[in-house]
Length: 419
Image (cartoon, rainbow, N blue to C red; front, side, top):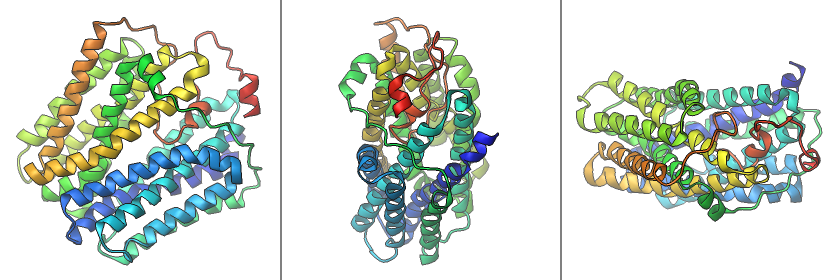
């Protein structure tokens, strides 16, 4: 308990970062509609966010080495607040895309700093509890951020002021803590080709998880608007997907530790295809409760895929490659997430809102077929570590919560102690 209390400032900072960043995506989508942005332009905003996130993930570890944790976090907060505040000042989708790239950099940088700080202070005897609390705080922040959309006016300056406030006050817990900032961790090398050779199924799973998750997160508000949902109903719609994903983690994890994890990817994808076809082809008009249920089904089937794919890749990875593998998977996730909002927004513009879930269904069908093909080419290894929910937040996370292997004594090696 004492250890958890000592990390309170870091957890509060992460919660506040989520409150600011998580509410910005749906707020921008609804504000874009109010300002007359085209569907493709709204998709551009989502792609710009993930481009900035990609940049932030890979420059922040080196930036921490130059200026330190506290200054890097302060810079991230300043960039995030600036990006939010300038939305009502700079009109036009291209300006907003640039601002969303800035906020994406800020979010990735903030997570990298906090996770690096945790990594340096966590110990083996409390690692699991700290990880559990971190996941709960992160998920509570996500749900709370979506709930904020119900009360924010997307056409007002005040809404972006409130988002900026969260970006600023996330500084306070770290600024007031008496804990000394840790030494800087070494940035992992980026080796995407090595990850692809290690496990093609995991890489394809990560890309599909990125494509479907980013499409729903960035373009989902537009889908809800086109389906006639009110603003508070859109907030419930987005939150339902997160809640569905959270509820599914335990049963999916239990199954993923018992059978071939590629079969789990296939099963999730098959259920996702059925759910998406229901959402796009069979959903009756004027049924918000059914839309909420459909969003929860989407979250339950789509959101665990990244964690299952990462666990499967780790089954093949030697211990000295786990951190670099995490960085490579985050690279593939970023690539998929950058292009998906643009594609899904274009499809909605051309074929209507139902095209969003047809796009998601097509991506999951491709994953299902690829996993089936790979099952004919190679047998699955025995699980090397238990399944766990894996946030896509920074490259530091794999070092922070490095999966324990059968036979490991849980003692960090000398390199990890220095880090």
